[in-house]
Structures are given as C-alpha cells and as structure tokens.
Image 1: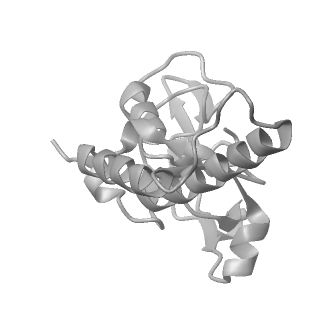
Image 2: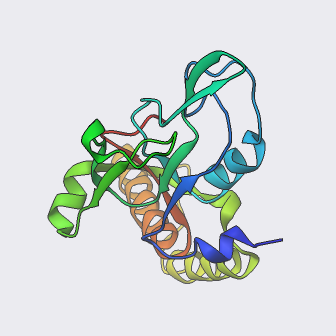
Length: 185
C-alpha cells in the first residue's frame, strides 16, 4: 500500500482527480458515504485542505435517474488562488466537469490567503518528534525557572517565550494546519 505521508512530505502538495469517494465533508448533499474513510484519513493525517467549492463535479444518468455529486477533488497543503468549473464550451464528452485551478507563486500572496491554526502532531514521524523534543530541550535549558515569588509580568514573559519557542520548533518539525479563505474545512 502507498505511504501517503511519504508522498505528501513536501510543503507544496496538491492531489487532484476523480477520487470516486462520497462524503459530506466535500459534498453537503451526500446521502451515502462511499470510499470516504480512506481519503478523510489522508486529509486529516497530512494537513490537507479540501479546495473544492461545493459545486457538483460529476453528472450522471443511470436507469432513467439523473444525479450529481462531488467526486473530483482537489486536496492541497498550499494556497490555491483560483478554483472554478469551466463553462460548457469546454465540454470533453465526459460526465465529469472540467476544473481549472491556479496555484499562487508569490509568497506575499500566499500569506494573504492562509491562517495557521496549529500543527498536525499526529502526522509527525517518530524521527521528527524526537528532533522537536531535542530542539525544545536545547532552547529551554537556557531559561530560568519560575518560582512562587515570580511577578505576574515574569510569568507572562515566560509564557510568551514558551509560545514563540514552541511555534519555532513545530514550524520546523511538524506540518501546519492551515485555513484558507476558500477552505470548506
């Protein structure tokens, strides 16, 4: 079986295609979950975002019944500045829509489209977790201990330092959990 964490180890990963999976996470109209658990786990364990906008990507006719669903997905851990379904004049003869998307390349533009919510610790490898712990210990050993006699200001300064130092450690060793302006997560 393919090791998705190894495939998605890079900061700029985009997975897109006909996933043939049905889930309320990417299709609010979904009535029956099918082939979804695997992809939901890949999304959660690798800090990916569902970049679709909820519009149907697949239109079908079977046994006189018609329907539509969202089974063509875009999963990414980087900003997508444009995601749209093209007009009918781009028809391919398929029952799937043609999807056009654009990746931002300007780092300033990327910063405008995302907000970091935290880190995906569950997706860290054992090696990365050990390296993060070692880095934290190195940073923290230089810090003075807080005692009962500390002032409120000293406690606040230490808390601020802890937050900043831990953010630096996790930025280096763990995948960020991001929210994008167009995210459905």
